[in-house]
Image (cartoon, rainbow, N blue to C red; front, side, top):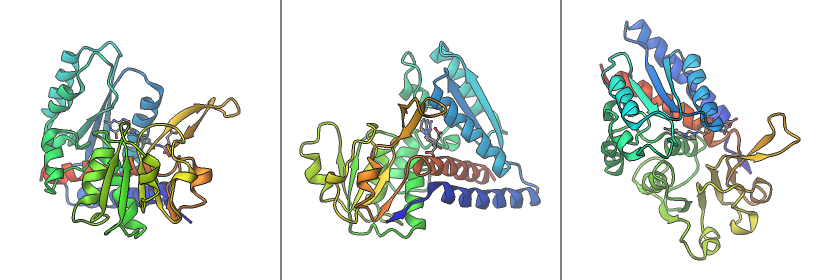
Length: 291
Ligand SMILES: Nc1nc(=O)c2c([nH]1)NC[C@@H]1CN(c3ccc(C(=O)N[C@@H](CCC(=O)O)C(=O)O)cc3)C=[N+]21
């Protein structure tokens, strides 16, 4: 069994990105600049955005965090987006999800200039991804593809079962892995909350991407011997014995599943850190695209 070490791989990627930033600077080009908008003070969201800002510092990017209160109106948020769209120094920006319920997420994501949409959530970029045209790939799926590639995990002709159909992970993952590309050429089944006989499907899977958001959902009895397991879930589970009062759990029951897996991503230290590294990669690309 091999651990797909996202922490190590993301550290390697960040070194590569830092090297590119140095080269840009030597050529007298501008420093990449990522901005993030955070609405409200959800604990997990604050952690993730904080990690993104820290990662920017590490690779030598400039970063801006726009921290708005929970009661921010949709109009006010749209104004902030317009101002980032028009800010020539900002190469790319993201709006941390989820947004408060009074804000229309689709409307907000459509307001982002697709050339600065380093999350790859704008319909233009989703369309380009689907057509396999050059674009910003959504960071989590992009990170998983990179991890599979760097560990030389064979995907061609394999049966992948993606559990979850979200716009940010499950759906794009299913599209990318079925495409003719590195870590692609797979036969993909998308399972979701209405799927019948899920266990029958997962037992046939060579590769399982668990992205449904239920802690420790996938157990050893649902998995074939030597399957490749990608755990996208990250849930804070109350645990009084921990410093912070919680532990992080994936969508995979690691203890039972790892006994059968050939490759498996841990939580923490798997897909999460890769997401951040790929966001940086997209920002570097946005900066280079500008010329
Ligand atoms: N517009 C937008 N873009 C996103 O990419 C986005 C988002 N919204 N909303 C939430 C999800 C989630 N996400 C994570 C990023 C890093 C870790 C990460 O680094 N996790 C660490 C642990 C961090 C911890 O201690 O909580 C790990 O898995 O090792 C996890 C999750 C990005 N997301």
